[in-house]
Image (cartoon, helix red, strand yellow):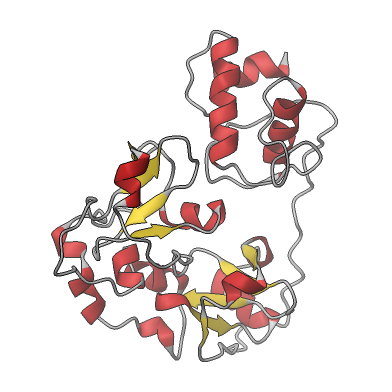
Length: 284
């Protein structure tokens, strides 16, 4: 697990993958839309936000992930020398696989880095919808949202399990995005395709985990893991998402940290991953 983008492309701080890449237009802003093409066209946050190097001195390494001592907030150091916040863990995991590469800096050092824009969803990774609007949108570069006008259009674009790839955006976050051209269906083979069947949710009444889990994964077994941690002396939070009674289906930073604490207490290697040795102990 690493903090590098989960693909085979250049790393974010590679000079060949900096703001100059933004000169190449994203073909998914209009017309046909391909999730893979949208992802490949925008390989870094610098490109997505059109960040350019500043003329003044910078206080962080471009392309790095940083956090300050005593805070759980993680920022992306952009090519513009500013720190850009991840509004939530789902957005973070659309760009990175984990937290291993996060650099801790002093509170004073963090204060010297000016605050920039919020990081947006990586194009192609997830679809989004605002809580007050039933429309589902694909994401293109720069936070351009393209409405998938029908279920058939969504299925053609993301496959039969499209409705498992939709995240809700708050109204406040929705305002960071811009509405683009709608995506319409081609009509090829949609009419005969049945409704997607969602997998049965894993039972959470008993702490049995049949698969390994790691940061970025989503599922009811993640919720069950959070419930297990909350009821076995390792609560994720006192209130809000992850707290007892408010567990989520997203394996994020708090789950990772608390699972490491549990592993240390059990004499296991503190990886923060629900790996086979940890599952064996919990399932027994």
